[in-house]
Length: 495
Image (cartoon, rainbow, N blue to C red; front, top):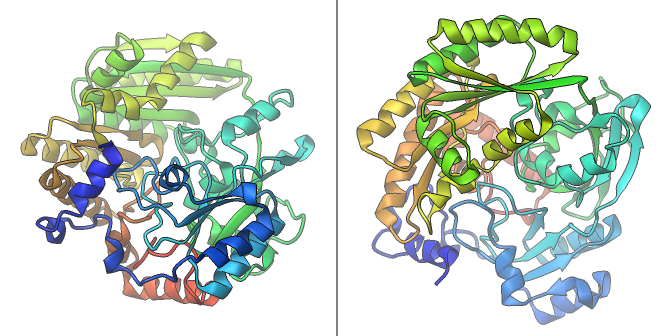
């Protein structure tokens, strides 16, 4: 039995289901969906062609889960779209028949956002992989929904530009819009919200809209409601993003990376806050606790001191970086940091950040067969030391061995990563309770339960606590207006 099936078995065990707060609900707990009939599948084939439709178990299972701990919930049918016309016609067909419609990009999410909790049709857009335009003089580009961030950067490598939003995984760019993803470079370049200028979106009834107007790609606008940011972070519940227009940035003249290590968590996080207060335009400030560093050393063949650590990166003109790095080095020493090591060679620097991006797999390698459960809280930077220290104390007091703290502390976002035995429901319950406590601390300190992963299935109850019943009702009214039949990725964001 594979890991996904073990998780499914654990979560759905009748003796433990009542105690698993926030876990994936079984199909009996959600509104019953319309059965996908053979005639419906034939109608879909008429739209996209028989070769683009699959009901094979392996294909359905592949499209029924992401990288999270949530169990597999396969759709009834998987459809591969090759054009916006395909997407529009399939959406209209699903809407007319009341069939749930779940968009699928690359499957790298961490909140169960693509799980087909009511069955239905999964619409895979990976074949829509064209870069439509690159406007180097205007620092923007337009891509279809199947283009990934690495594919885009490879395409524009000769222009002197790059797209810096880097969640680690090679996610699809429209999928990144859908969850308002960010990553290690967010402290300097922002998130997908700040870097998305326009989107082509197919609504539930098949209508196609451009959120900022057809062909618009200005850096600012005051024209009406901000529809673009309405769909950024909507997680496929309002429509399917088929194109996006994105900001590009100039490749920096010089890049310097560094690592430094501290006697405790407080010292490392205090250093982060002080660096930002000095106004130094950092590109990345990543925190890893000693457990994470140990995992990195073993998996990525590093020899870093096993201690709370910061990974730093500076972008800019070579003349300006010297002064910035000197100030940061002084702040590190002032907070009892040590082993300050610079990485200016591209190969060495890339190896360092590759290790950071592989931290999820590094941690999982310490416990073979485990599944990851990641928190995603974000707080104002001034409150960051308190929330991380309290989280670390909670983990230590609970005696959790497989609890890792890491994250993009430069913008107040960090993750607590737990490794779960997928066949141990009590372990899942305990981790969920601990994760909820961490989220409540963040909310207490004026933060959010999710900085970049989204709500999906796992944080629906926390969303109510964060925005309140009135805010949630407004969200539901928007959902009702755009998707009155409730077919768009049902069961996600709110119940």
